[in-house]
Length: 106
Image (cartoon, rainbow, N blue to C red; front, side):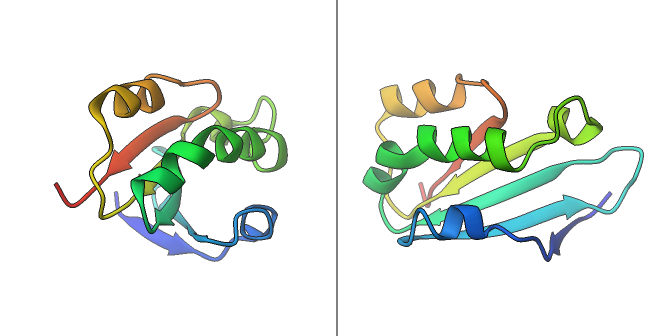
């Protein structure tokens, strides 16, 4: 399985969060479908302030209720800053509608 960039209308996120870049990545395997919205943030603080709102907007505007893709959706937050451990655990353990993943340079 490969993860490939996919053209997708993420304007509902870009319009709301102008200081964050959004990219869609999807698997090329129909039997192991995974979709991932990558949120590139300048600072960890931007992630901390916006992760919950982004997750809620993805749940309302992007996920299809009852569809296969509703169970294989990931949000990846990327920043060069280190996120405080307690905040990282809070974000990663909140699986309301997607599985959040944090990535930093450390």
